[in-house]
Image (cartoon, rainbow, N blue to C red; front, side, top):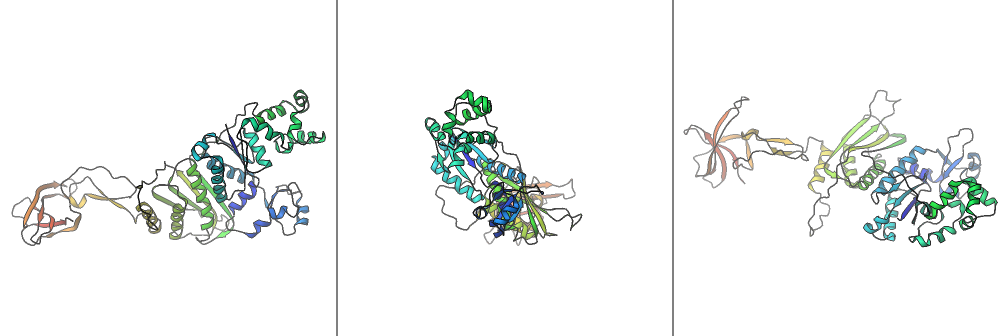
Length: 480
């Protein structure tokens, strides 16, 4: 097996930055602090803050003395966990073996992925590009064991050890603090003058077990592959729900575009990971419950002609829907909910299709029109199982499949709203008669003999006359 470790060194800061409703320069001076109000400590800080000497575990007072313009935000483990689950869903698109066992990393088995996506340098470049679009700070390393890949990622970004025979040599050079060992054991080993993993591995195993316990030796074995290391595997959920809360009220749909882009990007990354699409999603706009008591969240449904996972097209539909729907109150939080995730089937293309430029396919155009004009503004016509011409069609949602109907005689492409008297006799009868005698059950009884005729002007028409041979001719439609 070959494991890739996606280390997330700034998980809390990335989660906070992704949840910001606008790009804020204050994020550059931000630090996360613990929720201990008596003595808050620094949990993490942006690079500009760390450059001034601020570090993890430092008191807030000491950090403010070093960096007077420091901005703070509370550390939110739940937000971090949600981002880790999003990244696990993204990784699931590349491997069926993804684990969230480690708190600061995602572990991905890529032995089979390399055969599908190409050698590791190509896959690594693809991952880094996609993680950059998601706004994720990361470090990557690959090794035959998950623990070794994680330890190498902590030491040097981009490390690749693909051969199990060279794994021990790579691990021997690791600092013991990066090997994932118990913190108390690391301090004790440092007190003994040990700094590298090779020095620890050279000690008698029985002495290590007596001093640090069997779990210590087991960790070393799993690290180098001498013992199995079963991992709990991630399974993607069957629905998607993402929420972004704002620290101020948003009153315009244009301002909602930036957070919406982030949530739709997360949705499409999730869909890609499970090889699915979305055909219906819902935007839920939450309002201030104290300022607007009794006002329920605004729910906007967006439907698509066919399942899609293209972030740009889905975002455009959502923006059009927001612009077309007045929001009754300022927005304090935005939700994207997709409960129905059907399989995704790419649109069939001809191998030699010419580039379409800015043209839209019909499903995309119909989706945009429905979002702008309303769900009832775009529909298709479908045949209805009724022999009477005036009632032989119905409106239907264009995405719905048409119900099967009986095959009738020839029908014109242009049916007149109401029959009109035909001027003169037909020049020639081309087909017919087709007798339609129906409607006695609902009060719309009719008895007609229909013909395909050629008029004296050479036009093909659809006309009828009553069952009585002396009834006048009435024109009901034109053939193209």
